[in-house]
Length: 180
Image (cartoon, rainbow, N blue to C red; front, side, top):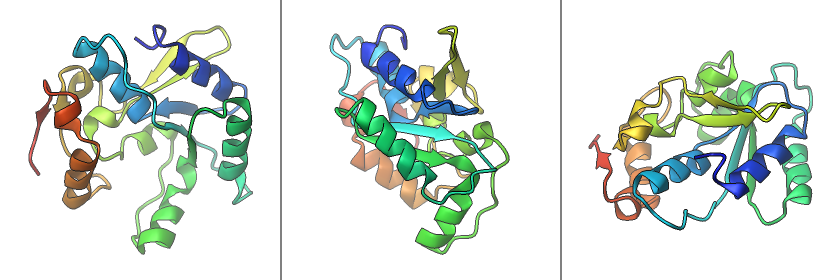
């Protein structure tokens, strides 16, 4: 599925060019690609934004994410990029929500905290053009069209808001969406 999407492959190549050690494109770009294919849609959903996550616990610049976003925008200006160092997400929670959450120790652990289990999936591309998959909770929910709340960081209210605002049931009617 990933190889069949020229836009996802192009995005993967651009992110790879940044030289990050531990990274992936995840969340909506992957979820939508898979759910569109499983629904038999001839035209895939437009990529609304590209979530790039990486793990660098040695990052010493608070502006590193913004610099990486700028570089990606310069390389592919048609996409809306969002770059997040998973090693600093706990600081973001504290600064934006006043919520104390423990820091994560790896890219996989960070991806594993996203609001829905089906969305806790990312892909990356190595120099040999092999696609890697980051799926700390596995791929069952994604491929079984199951939407369930992941309580590791997201509240039930956040989960419900996301299901509604992203119009999961409307966009992909074959989904089974669990109430929370």
